[in-house]
Amino acid sequence: MDAALGDMVTAIENVVRGELACSPRVAATLFQRIGFPSFSRAVTPNHLTTRELQVADLINRGCPTKEIAWRLGVQPCTAKNHVRNILHKLEVRRRGQAVAKLRTLIGERFTPG
Image 1 (cartoon, rainbow, N blue to C red):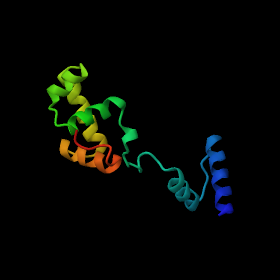
Image 2: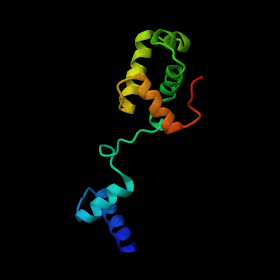
Image 3: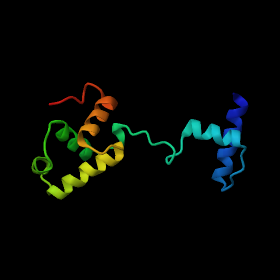
Image 4: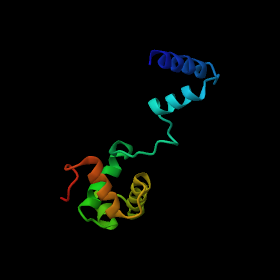
Protein backbone atom coordinates (compact mmCIF):
# COMPACT_ATOMS: atom_id res chain seq x y z
CA MET A 1 0.00 0.00 0.00
CA ASP A 2 2.84 2.42 0.85
CA ALA A 3 4.50 1.70 -2.50
CA ALA A 4 1.28 2.55 -4.33
CA LEU A 5 0.95 5.77 -2.33
CA GLY A 6 4.55 6.69 -3.14
CA ASP A 7 3.89 6.03 -6.83
CA MET A 8 0.85 8.30 -6.67
CA VAL A 9 2.82 11.10 -5.02
CA THR A 10 5.49 10.83 -7.71
CA ALA A 11 2.84 10.88 -10.44
CA ILE A 12 1.21 13.98 -8.95
CA GLU A 13 4.57 15.73 -8.70
CA ASN A 14 5.17 14.89 -12.38
CA VAL A 15 1.81 16.40 -13.33
CA VAL A 16 2.63 19.58 -11.38
CA ARG A 17 5.78 19.87 -13.49
CA GLY A 18 3.70 19.39 -16.63
CA GLU A 19 4.73 15.78 -17.10
CA LEU A 20 2.48 12.76 -17.16
CA ALA A 21 4.42 9.55 -16.95
CA CYS A 22 2.75 6.91 -14.85
CA SER A 23 1.82 3.30 -15.21
CA PRO A 24 -1.75 2.26 -16.00
CA ARG A 25 -1.94 0.87 -12.45
CA VAL A 26 -1.07 4.26 -10.97
CA ALA A 27 -3.48 6.05 -13.30
CA ALA A 28 -6.30 3.69 -12.30
CA THR A 29 -5.50 4.19 -8.62
CA LEU A 30 -5.55 7.98 -9.05
CA PHE A 31 -8.94 7.84 -10.78
CA GLN A 32 -10.31 5.65 -7.99
CA ARG A 33 -8.93 7.78 -5.16
CA ILE A 34 -9.45 11.33 -6.41
CA GLY A 35 -11.93 10.83 -9.22
CA PHE A 36 -12.19 12.57 -12.55
CA PRO A 37 -15.12 14.94 -13.19
CA SER A 38 -16.16 13.56 -16.56
CA PHE A 39 -16.22 10.02 -15.19
CA SER A 40 -17.85 10.81 -11.87
CA ARG A 41 -21.38 12.08 -12.36
CA ALA A 42 -22.80 11.30 -8.95
CA VAL A 43 -24.94 14.30 -8.05
CA THR A 44 -25.42 15.37 -4.47
CA PRO A 45 -27.47 18.24 -3.09
CA ASN A 46 -24.16 20.13 -2.86
CA HIS A 47 -24.07 20.21 -6.68
CA LEU A 48 -27.23 22.31 -6.70
CA THR A 49 -26.98 26.02 -6.06
CA THR A 50 -28.81 27.60 -3.15
CA ARG A 51 -31.41 28.98 -5.55
CA GLU A 52 -31.84 25.58 -7.22
CA LEU A 53 -32.45 24.01 -3.81
CA GLN A 54 -35.07 26.69 -3.12
CA VAL A 55 -36.72 25.90 -6.45
CA ALA A 56 -36.53 22.17 -5.72
CA ASP A 57 -38.27 22.76 -2.39
CA LEU A 58 -41.07 24.63 -4.16
CA ILE A 59 -41.35 21.85 -6.76
CA ASN A 60 -41.58 19.42 -3.85
CA ARG A 61 -44.45 21.49 -2.47
CA GLY A 62 -46.27 21.16 -5.80
CA CYS A 63 -45.79 24.71 -7.03
CA PRO A 64 -46.06 25.31 -10.78
CA THR A 65 -43.40 27.39 -12.53
CA LYS A 66 -45.40 30.65 -12.37
CA GLU A 67 -45.87 30.31 -8.62
CA ILE A 68 -42.18 29.49 -8.14
CA ALA A 69 -41.35 32.68 -10.06
CA TRP A 70 -43.78 34.73 -7.98
CA ARG A 71 -42.53 33.36 -4.65
CA LEU A 72 -38.88 33.95 -5.57
CA GLY A 73 -39.49 37.33 -7.20
CA VAL A 74 -38.10 36.31 -10.59
CA GLN A 75 -39.45 36.07 -14.11
CA PRO A 76 -41.19 32.82 -15.10
CA CYS A 77 -38.50 32.14 -17.70
CA THR A 78 -35.85 32.36 -14.96
CA ALA A 79 -37.77 29.89 -12.80
CA LYS A 80 -38.13 27.61 -15.82
CA ASN A 81 -34.36 27.78 -16.36
CA HIS A 82 -33.76 26.80 -12.73
CA VAL A 83 -36.12 23.83 -13.10
CA ARG A 84 -34.37 22.77 -16.31
CA ASN A 85 -30.95 23.03 -14.61
CA ILE A 86 -32.15 20.91 -11.68
CA LEU A 87 -33.48 18.23 -14.01
CA HIS A 88 -30.24 18.24 -15.98
CA LYS A 89 -28.00 18.05 -12.90
CA LEU A 90 -30.06 15.23 -11.40
CA GLU A 91 -30.17 13.48 -14.79
CA VAL A 92 -33.96 13.11 -14.79
CA ARG A 93 -36.69 14.21 -17.19
CA ARG A 94 -39.59 15.07 -14.91
CA ARG A 95 -40.15 17.12 -11.75
CA GLY A 96 -41.45 14.11 -9.85
CA GLN A 97 -38.30 12.18 -10.68
CA ALA A 98 -36.21 15.09 -9.39
CA VAL A 99 -38.14 15.17 -6.12
CA ALA A 100 -37.80 11.39 -5.71
CA LYS A 101 -34.05 11.57 -6.35
CA LEU A 102 -33.61 14.43 -3.88
CA ARG A 103 -35.58 12.53 -1.25
CA THR A 104 -33.18 9.62 -1.76
CA LEU A 105 -30.13 11.89 -1.58
CA ILE A 106 -31.25 14.14 1.27
CA GLY A 107 -33.57 11.80 3.13
CA GLU A 108 -36.40 12.73 5.43
CA ARG A 109 -35.44 16.43 5.45
CA PHE A 110 -36.82 16.65 1.90
CA THR A 111 -40.42 15.60 2.32
CA PRO A 112 -43.63 17.19 1.06
CA GLY A 113 -44.39 20.45 2.82
